[in-house]
Image 1 (cartoon, rainbow, N blue to C red):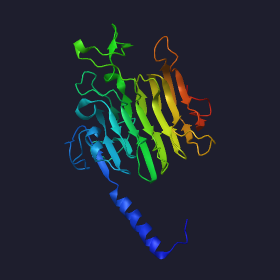
Image 2: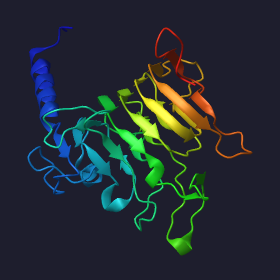
Image 3: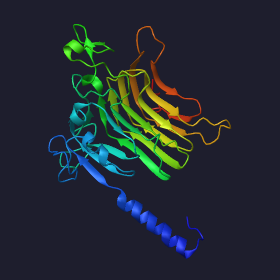
Image 4: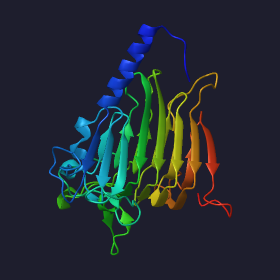
Length: 296
């Protein structure tokens, strides 16, 4: 929409918008062909973890097919600025099929000496301080925590929460697969989207997918698959708790499938829910199809 403002102010605003656009960058990651430094389409990085330190607000990371274990096999990618992470590309980035021919799978190595027990993928901007309108997007990423977990038993089916130092085994991570958190500084509006992702074999106390909104945030969680996890399948959470109940984050949870969600442990009360809502949220849930909800 147009506005009546002085000519000088118009020129200044146009200049700032141009600079902001020029600062946004695209980075490319490919397990098969990556070299680890340039992160261009022609010379992609080897792992998402290798480009995290380079990311600025508004950047986009394109991640090709393959299995990724984090930088130095740490098993956890944690980003603190609002960016887009898009997976499911072919090795040359010419085509995209996230759940079919070109699966981008984030896992890890439970015996890694660089073990990080954090979420497998987090875009956590709660402490982000910039003013403006930003977007967080996670699209087409598959999280499989099986290789990050510690198991026992004859059939290796029992989750072990504690480490086994003698065998060089780390504890099973108690954090979720995908965690996205909108900035909570009062200076920012943020649109958060998690879509076309799959999360499996996670053993958290909270959501396998956790989405956090702040004042006036718009959060969408759609067309995701969550299967065989502890805690909750999807968490809709808020870092904004006003006394007047205004400007609550608005969530749309649509067309997701959540199957086999277990309690955190046999005797605990934590978890076992397909979806859980925080206080001070406004949530609209839409089932997968007209025949009945697949969320549960």
